[in-house]
Amino acid sequence: MEWNYANVPEGLIELTSGAYELKAFYGDPNFTASTQDMYVEGKKIFNVDHNQTEVFVTCKPVCGKVTVQFDSKMADYFNDYSISFNTKALGESIIAWTKDSTDPIYMKVENNESITATYNLVDKTGKIAEKPIVKTYDLSPQKHLILKVVPVVSGGNLGITITVDDK
Image (cartoon, rainbow, N blue to C red; front, side, top):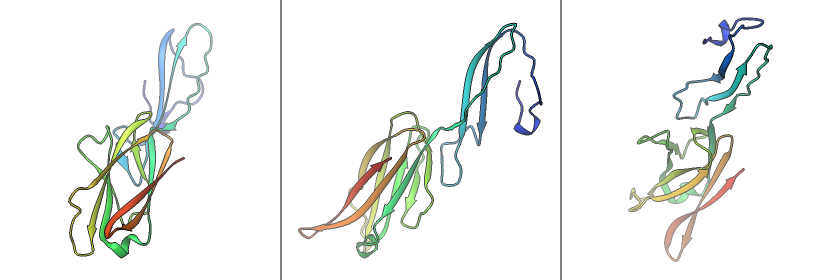
């Protein structure tokens, strides 16, 4: 049996004896990543015998949240900068946080999944960094990863410092 929320029968639902799985969700089940939406679900396996069984399920996000805080000094040294993220669910695709992004990114992840972040930098002369900076971070559903990116000039070289706050 399957119902959309608006069509769920009121009152008791009679089931024959056996094993069942109750699944409730909100959003697109094919969700991979977004700055606008997230996907939540809950599952509960239960058995029905001759007694009345009451079952409850709690829906939780299947995604982790990522926020990037680019220091205002980034604009002093770079014309453009962004971070491209990849997860198992995204496959060959990416989702990017650009220098003007403000909304968090919600990404479908497994527990302690290693996500890849590729830092893309273009200096004031328009030169693209020869080697992008690639980092990996562990992210789990219902967790929030905050990346703070600050430019650093040392010995005539320009780079960035990345601070990770994994609440």
